[in-house]
Length: 474
Image (cartoon, rainbow, N blue to C red; front, side, top):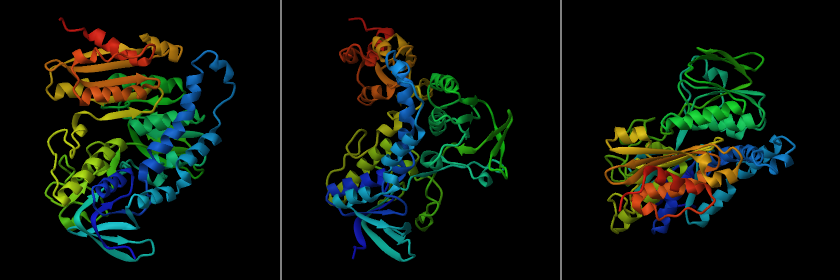
């Protein structure tokens, strides 16, 4: 019989919740994960991993066609069935058996069912068979339940049975046509993937693409999507959606009607907090949970939150970063060990504020970290922005014929450190960690001159950015 009392109870056994529990157990505590779906969560089964599996094959095919010699060897089209089979392998056919084995092997208990807070440090779990078990926490409860796709209140949209990111990443067959409502990461990535499958894709965005990133990112992705056959409607409002008796969907917009076999809505996320008992502890169901940098919920000494529910940075890697800080600090506080909660300390998620890395796996990719030019100015920094066309780097010309892309470096002129970097181009995701280190460590520009990029690689873009900025006089 499993115990009903633990040092730590974690609501949600996705990648973030797993990391909270694992760090706490490594710190000497007992921990239990409560999950009503699949252990491993959204990223493993409906987001990061399956989406990238769907994107990679098309990306590899397009890359081969850009290199003479390889291009002549590519005589066929994408094998969609093989792509979907590879995606299924990534998700283990939506079985979480290996994830459960990992958790139990790490000393973490797993309880199946829907967990709801029913009081301070108390969670009631309703199992699939309807039985209820009350669990109590000696030290902490951490909410790591993630987020759900937001379905906006567009007339008729819900009745039209739209796809969300879940249906798009887990589809067993590929529709002949797809309308995508949205202009963010999910919208542009899925438009890229399905266009590669041969689907006729129409992307409908109220503004430009990838708002919040450097403007050139959305512009270059828009151009590329159109070259890949996607019909991109910018500055376009969706007014009504209906599904006909024959099964097709009609999306009515102020630029005319779009008819497709399926419609994907990709307009944001909403916190998965509506039915977890927040009202029993004085919080509002459906709200984001605000935390300090140790991930402790405001106004509590026992409630923590990590991942999407905090609305700090809705990215798996950033949620896992928060989880490591939270699991470690919960263990430290429970055992009386010192807490390192100053900025950049061991028990805080400082990077959430101005050093968040992100990759959009369109083709070209968009890789960014830190502040954009606009965000830096709005934050009050005195900045200088340096741009460089990446096709001018020797390594880029080796990588592919006609390599095109843009890099931007945002510099704090007073401290002479990098505040943000954005790369747009093929395979630029592999450049991002160097930029993340430069931003996080606040490496002075005069020291960056001594970080010599290997030749001929695309990393030489760093030297070109520094040369364009200009070396300080000695």
